[in-house]
Image (cartoon, rainbow, N blue to C red; front, side):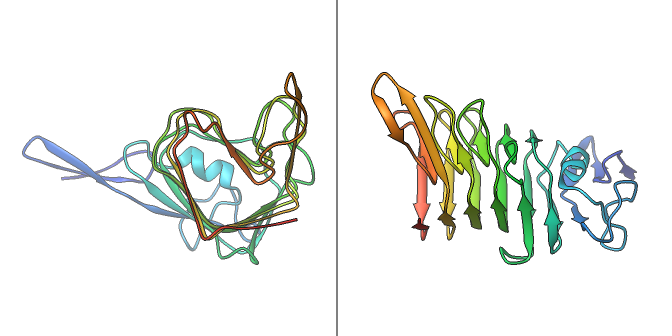
Length: 212
């Protein structure tokens, strides 16, 4: 038998065993509506809503169409793959307010977009913060531009790996990002592009370009 569960993931049951097949959903800032079903012909409008609808059992994929998205303070607490149409096409624009995303799940992948002009004033990570000891985080072919973390004693103008997460950053570009700190050791900048505590956070960085 085939049972359709609430998040549109198909569950198959056979001989008292069950497994779920990952689904692919679609987001389009121009033609989408969060009242749609998230299919290619009937996409959602926001990444925030799409993340709320993906399965908690498997790693679904969200394809984000070309367009400008002004969402912020997104909480990603499920394993998911988020794929844009390319850094020149899928644009997440924070207009200088709030962080783009907090990641609090294993196996979160973000690809093929630009994340720009976000700011966080409460702790590290102007654009993205990995909040705990999560593994399988991957950020690939993403441009980070003009993100700011002005928080005292924090770092990572674009990305902050807060604790012992395992994160891979590859084929990304960082430019115009800035982190400022002021603590007992003095004042200055710390991790304008990305920051991790070297005691705790394993990080792989491949093919990354930084420029001011």
